Length: 469
Image (cartoon, rainbow, N blue to C red; front, top):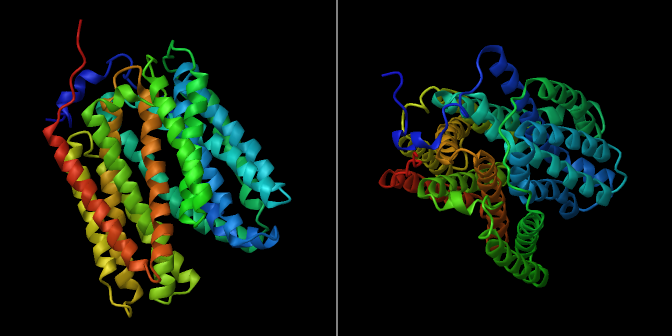
């Protein structure tokens, strides 16, 4: 039956008129705008990674200071996601995306003209806020662009371009640095962003707006809670126990105040109402596990290839590329079936394959050739690409009408917090063990299998259909 849906128990969670979607050229133009904004955000994150050594040398900074070019971007992105998702629901998801593109372009100019590491770090934080504007409403817009029965395809297409952005970023960064100075990795954002803002102003759908006023106090508490926790944990991992303990303690106080405050709100910034829904909570936890596992691999694998397998930098880039290729290819492939089979099945299979790929890499002999490394990396990436779209679909369709913004923000929070946790775990393992490269791969496999078990377990729970009057 072509009309058979993946999760019939969730079909009460959408409004046929609200989620009717777009068709023909309208859908194509709107989705092109979403993808361009997404690529702007993803590419700049991965391109900047490649330029860190050059930036550190040019600005006379240490490697630890240069890492804040990445940390400032990611931390600002994570801390602002939920408040901006709530504001996006109030002002319109399309407007929030457009604001993000403009802010991102302004920050890109600030990055390009920075004269020292402090200026660059602050500009990158502003760029992270712009990216957060885009990412906080990205999937919510897809929810309104695609009709309900095709939402899985839209989310899979989103995942495909995330994979392409991750894959193309290092290559584009290396090319730019080979012909120009590092500020050009930020200048090149301007033409892409110009096209994105022009298309967004004409093509993005007008979405229903929430009538709930913006919670300014809750927004400030949310940003403080994430930022203090992120900086505190980073201090711990780098051995600064005093700052780490102090900032983490203040973050816990901030979280306590935030959760107490949010209980009084009809549409809380931290979506406590959605997290009470077991299918939604499980899907977020599974996403978190998946991205912890992926970053344990992504952050540690360059060191594994360099130190254990004695590969040169150019070869390292080529051997990591199959991961992104696998993610992109399978994200597109699974999009064709994500609307017809339950996420409990598809995402479990994906994470199991991902874990198997990590184990195959972990048990490789040290004299393994490049082909042996590459195909195992491809297997792990294909598993991850198979896992993401069905799980992301489960997050979005479990949210009731009017809470698409909160669900979209929480989806991005699960991804970014998983990535951040994975990176912190790598830093901790590298601090504890003299040669932790294969330990990181083993840990990545273990977390992937835990995520698969959680995914399979959600068959025991059913979302409660919305009550009809």
